[in-house]
Length: 97
Image (cartoon, rainbow, N blue to C red):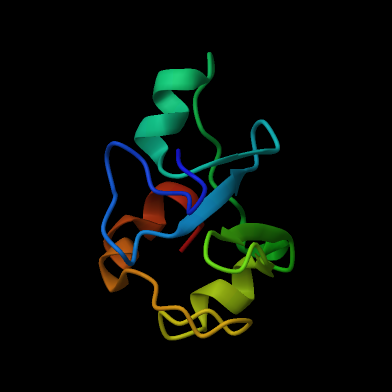
């Protein structure tokens, strides 16, 4: 993962978030990075914990709650950087739906 949180798997100009995984309290750029580095299965964040600050913006280094991220319209509410809208296709891997 580089300083903007881009990784070998996702590295477009909009791939600039990292997710703190509930299972290990560590930030990873994507689930593949977690699988390659962690020795355990990922745990999905339950909806009851969406107030947790678990989304790191690689543009401004701000940290967002899961709820703020899910409702931000693919734009960082802190710095207005564009996030990849395609990430929504993978939300089920990270967040309870």
